[in-house]
Length: 421
Image (cartoon, rainbow, N blue to C red):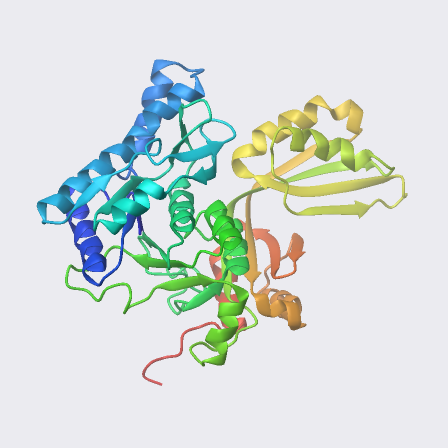
């Protein structure tokens, strides 16, 4: 079971989490719990680091920011003990959760679980701080924002758990953002592949890396809400959304628990920016000169369009980068203006990416055509397109985001049926 920062924000909410955890143990489960820091706490600790040293040492930064999860792990263990449950906290280095790569963006390598398994078999509830581990040098490491989701999936894989329940401030994965489309439906299940695409194109429910790890290790993940009353139905009886393999999804379809849809969900992302380089020489290697320095600077490029110029000697190149990287990308390209040979840079941060995702696209033609027709009928202009096997994304004006999401949700028949009808 994993609980995020909003679920752990204060002693009252921690008590509610303890009740949910106790109920799972009472149902006969062996329970390990991964917790995030209290909402806002990590930001506070990061600011302390910046005040202490502008060019801080990442290893010491990790020591500071990892303390947020240590506090909530201890508090939840204490709260469970006050309710008569056997519970203990395990810090990342005590298991240990062995990590590789750099401080502040470490990745889980292995988890040594024998002591943890023995503790669970004794009837203890294990409370583990998310987001943290230990390096080969014995230093505390952290896994970057959203790292607690990855911790939870990694612990579930190490324990060979039946399920990893990720409690968030939403009660599952919806066909789109319910704040934009009132008729958005909660999905009973989605495949790992679909969730990976949805997470990467703007759906904020799960961290992308955690979904990738769940897919690799075959961990069944359930997304559900921690904002439930103390006497609410337990997670086993009132499921949120299950994230499962293609094979399990086929069984769900065959048992008639869910109807097949060509499109599973629609995601939007306003954190994109567009860059146009005009009059780039139309010759071999020109595009490599543009994108190699961006790759070296770890700037992720998404949509790319190259237009052939009228005189065949020049071309315009359009692409998107995360909004936070726009200034850096612009500066890098300006530095290489002579090498690339472009005329000018035009940027636009008032854009949005709208994506339609679904494994049904693999075997069904016409998904993209439906998208383009629905948008054109509402006068929404498409500035760029990118596709994968199970996704079609378009770039549009930011002002038209909500309209586009609503129009497409209806066009693909995803609107919830009116109960009264």
